[in-house]
Length: 75
Image (cartoon, rainbow, N blue to C red; front, side):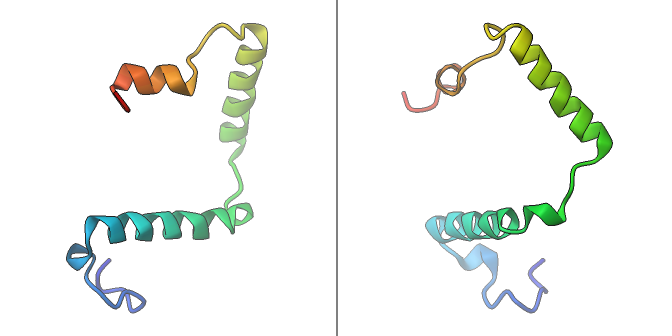
């Protein structure tokens, strides 16, 4: 990856904050063009299955707050 002509600096030379910002910028650039990566039929079916499961029983699953607590985030 470091041989890519667009990368002017070795990633390992960046600070942690700079690498996080780079990752966020990269992700944002992907999100801006997400329609270029259509879902496969299998992915669509899986999303539909999960959505239907949620509609049938909204008590199944966890909120984001519950997940963060279970993982020990923000304690």
